[in-house]
Length: 221
Image (cartoon, rainbow, N blue to C red; front, side):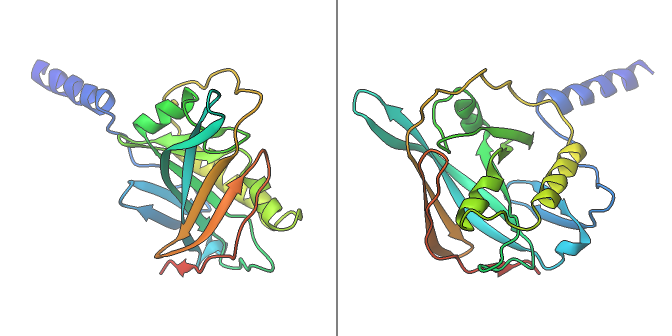
């Protein structure tokens, strides 16, 4: 009996101490499962998203040097963008952009060592042993700006999907965010590519967005 107790204790320690995290619960009403094996990332979508696409983009984080009055790119990583099947360039739906950080990058971002966006914050959704998955808290604004200032369809639905996936991966966040950001942040570059194609470059000044042609999309089978 004691051996069984000790074994259970060791197993529990390994599971928590070394970051072995349980698989997410499957939220009711979200039957579609997207899984990225490279980052061990799973996300669930409603049946109305059948035929959705995945767009691969990249975030870049810059550090500002007051002495040189310049911004240098010091970090970068992927953004997994889940796109509604009815999305069109002329009539877009709200994207769901999930930013991927290594644990080291996340700690540096939380300490304001670099800034992927010129304003707003990146909230932790959940994490695993190697990666942290974040959502920019003004992601809706980016789609509105790229749509000529007009709100895109499905914004409330996308927010609800994100919330339900976060609930399914309920866990303590790695580190509390500092109380505030600097009042003024530098202009940062944010480059984006679709799966297999480099075709979109985005530049962020404070809360503004400029972009080139829409990229081609590779549907998920």
